[in-house]
Length: 440
Image (cartoon, rainbow, N blue to C red; front, top):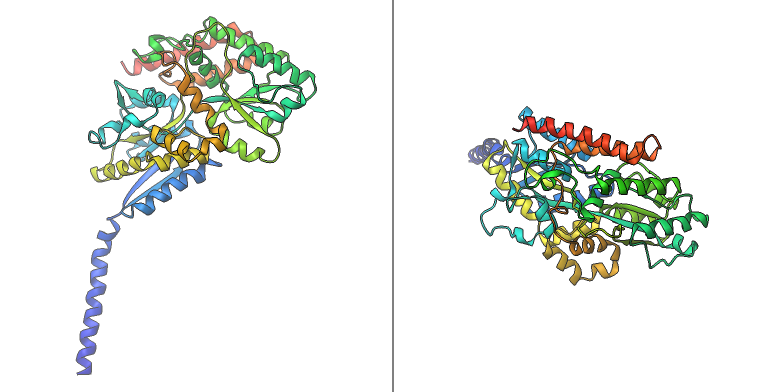
């Protein structure tokens, strides 16, 4: 009897073991894996991980794998290459200058096509962000880390130079005057610098209601000619070049490089992306007080608006219906008010929806962190015009690099502003022509 019971028990164990072997693959395949390529490093990386980990914990049947793929430029290039090679990610974070490239690529699934009507309230997306990434009123990529440029300033250095720390410059004339006082008083060797200089050049056009390219910045039809070498562009670069000779302005490098000089108090003002708010405040805590304000203006020009920067999430072709269902769930997650609000707190990027903005205001976040509100107020107080909705250029990445090189040559004294911009425009127009020939 005992032997029979033992044999029966053994048989039961074997059945269970066999079942585990047979059903293990099915259980493993119950989890849908989603690949998400991004360009967020440094302080922004833990913020991305917070979003992804929160989603994965709430959705045990879906596993989002966030992968850092390098700079914005690298993510865009790798994404296009991966689609052509037949192994695309499900989601890619592409910066704003990649908009026309992604629209023409033939590799995307427009975000609006994933959702049933009313499933997501796209009308809740902040107006300037929605306008930038929409075509014919339809949203093509999911808002994620939108930004714009603002002016940061060191209130302590302002005091040392005899300037009012609560009255930062509002015009380029005031910027130059205050900059001279900061330098002449010996407080700093140079007064200010700009991050992403070519982007700030684009910002200046939109802010003063000036077209950067023809066909309404490429939004009425494909842009075939740049306009940045016109009177306004020349005025901007002449002003910056003059301030560089006066040691008011100093070229500090591309992207976020000038932040180092600001943090080291070698300059007192910095025009930079709002995405640096969080890192700058963290780095200066207990060292000096940072203020933020709107971008300076040239007097006598019409008002436009600062333009959207940062990036959005693009959905790529080449995946199953089940995977797209999982992608949709993740996109619904990142647009939730509490998730978007936390992302803003962690990084300084805009709260992408009006609901998240209300949440932040209701809890008093902006009262305690006014520097996080500056960019948002700036972009919402501007005037919506064709000039300020954002530029769509074919191969905008290369064109921005061309402009950047022209600015560098001018600041280095190698050429004058008009010549530098004319030569850059000629090269940019060549790029646009080649691009248009590819997508006739």
